[in-house]
Length: 224
Image (cartoon, rainbow, N blue to C red; front, top):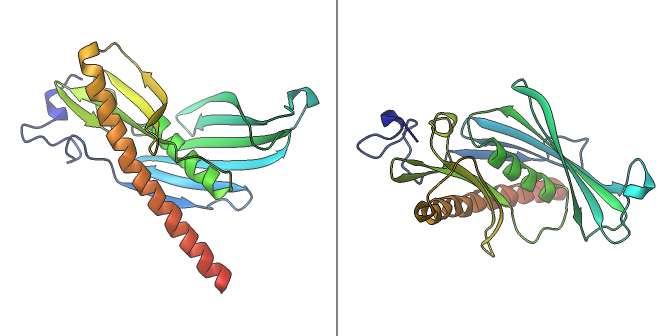
């Protein structure tokens, strides 16, 4: 990444964070009553909303139905900033002959948009009661000169250097996704991946805290 101002001589970034420090993460679950699961997440100034419907019967042609697994339909969009929508279809061995719809929208973009969407979708799936082997946590990382930075804001992402987005299953350490937007020398790849994985593990603790707090709130309401 180019730009001397992205990292001060004292090792502080534009927003006052240290190199490995995450942006402040705040999240709430069950924010959309009409959905089976939902979550709102703020990762710094990036804000994402995720809603989940299902499992339900496959809509449309019966040919889309799979006898041994569910079809997962995921749609991503950005409010105001873009009208384009990305759609992806996956399959899951649970819930045969059914469909799970995941809709994620970026309400405000300030870097790490994909990561915020993954983290919000994870909370929404938990809220919907969909069994998961682990949280799926995502974060970005990039270089300023030779210093790896975790959880990039927009200014850092647009600084001109190499950055990557990584999605991790923290308990097993398995990488679910690794995406880079530029070339990077092999000698530096492990350092950048390690920075992103460490950030994801930190995020998993935050998400776990959100889930536990939500469960406590639900149990109190149930008792009342």
